[in-house]
Amino acid sequence: MFKIIVVENYDEASREAFKVMKEVIDSNERPVLGLATGSTPIGLYKKMMADHKTGTSYKKCITFNLDEYIGLPKTHEQTYYTFMHDNLFNGLDIPEENIHIPVGDSANVPAECIKYEEAMKEYHIDIQLLGIGGNGHIGFNEPGTPFDTLTHIVDLQEKTRQDNARFFEHIDEVPTQAITMGIATIMKSKKVLLIATGENKADAIYGMIKGPVSEACPASALQNHNDVVVIVDKAAASKL
Ligand code: F6R
Image 1 (cartoon, rainbow, N blue to C red):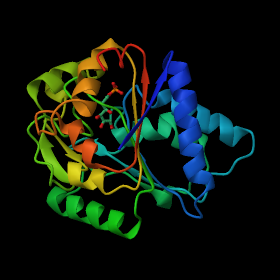
Image 2 (cartoon, rainbow, N blue to C red; image 1 turned 90 degrees about the horizontal axis):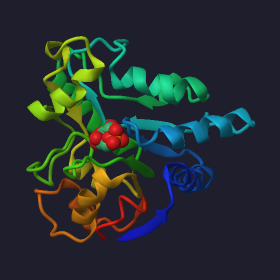
Image 3 (cartoon, rainbow, N blue to C red; image 1 turned 90 degrees about the vertical axis):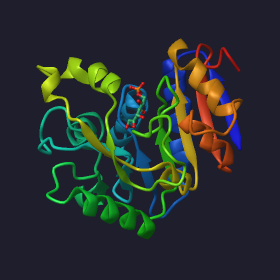
Image 4 (cartoon, protein in one colour; image 1 turned 60 degrees about the vertical axis):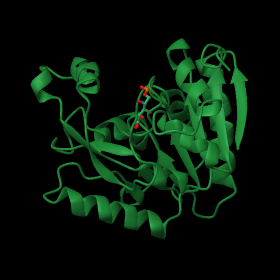
């Protein structure tokens, strides 16, 4: 079930998202947060860091990130590990042992996927934050991903690698694989908070909410989740 909140702009989207996130954090003894990378959550993360600066502690939070590249050392500037520390964790007081990000340079990546999924069984995610790709992807689950997938290895599509090449010196440096929570993993979280802004997300938002539930639009799986808050600006909502 979707609760759709339409806002004017990115800043308002971040403000509304912060309210939803804060409510979950305040109402749980040990909040378990599923987090995302990308440009979408940065505004929300800024609000969380500002909240911490005014005295709120985030020490009791446990976090799980959606995905990570395979093959880059953890501290490489393009890992999601680095992104999360630069854009959120360094500005909060969550103990490092409470932070979970798939280990993309593990010597045994298939075992890492199983271990990650097991850890989420122990800590049931209270709120999973999501962005959405222009093609409806969530996490690194591209169109065609079966809905029953748990945390798994994905081969990155050539288009995705080209899109990300701008962050690397050369396209050859862009990883060819990633670890991602699967769609079934995401569906297990108690609540989903999906933010989308901008016209380039309008088709994906339409497909997610009004399209058929189909692997052609991975986010459409969320039609079968009972608690999804969608925060969209007018441009992203324009096709609804
Ligand atoms: C991020 C992730 C991706 C992004 C999506 C949108 O961890 O898994 O699914 O949420 O690609 O990216 P942005 O926010 O950059 O438009």
